[in-house]
Amino acid sequence: MGFKESLPRTFYRALLAVGLFAQTTYSQPVLLQIRPHIGDTLRMHLSQTVEMTGTTRGHRHDTTSMTTSIEVFTRAIAEQYTSSGTLMQTITDSVAMTPASAASLADLKRRAMQARPVLLRVSADGGMEMVDDGDPNSELRHLFGEMPAVLTRAPVAVGEKWTREMQIPLSSEPGAVGSVRATFRLDSLGRNGDIAYISMRGTLSRINTAGAAPAGPGYGTSGQLSGTLQIDRRLGWITDSKSSIIVQSTIESPPDRRGDPKGAPMLVRTKITQWIRAMRAR
Image (cartoon, rainbow, N blue to C red; front, side, top):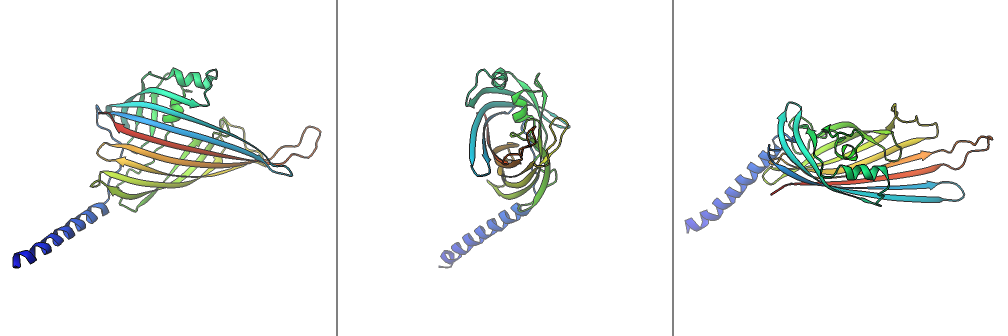
């Protein structure tokens, strides 16, 4: 009788001990870093959609819209550790763009990068840099080689936040750059602490650069971004990254040469949605 009564108590005590251990483990700061194992081959799938809508205000509302999407399948092979990050050989297996434009220069560049290995340096905090791809204007460099660092180099606990400031190109303005201030949060840890779930939110504003025309007095740009990240700490890689950036720009029409009043302002809304998935090749 005593044995039968003590068994449930022992079982519940064991469960309580496991729960307390897990809670203590997850509350301890962990180091989040990108450090794939040398020799591993990672398959990545990038999907990106850009939706642009322009609306002219005034007595008559004219709206125009355009949507483009691109899909890129790549392989990345971890080759060497360096003091500034992991060197990885990256091969683009296929690129698809909608709507397709075989005659456009950008499309020809995308196709030229297929099946051609390039060298990528990935820092421990998630920043990516093309080491040598033979073409400083290649589409692959724009997609992967301009990814800023998103992680903090210090250990963080569940619930802790950190802030990153980065620059990204504005699709609505060729040559223009936006300044992003994003706050990241370690939401939780899963699979015995092997998977880190991170959320992010931030704001965007236009900054003047040497390569872009300065914004006029009637021009304004602002935006917001949000997203999530999943880091496989055993794999040493971001296995799932979803982000959405919404940029709104107001453009005032200048007076014409005869000095007639300027036309109605135009509101341009750009939404960029990106999803990157990765897994180790079997």
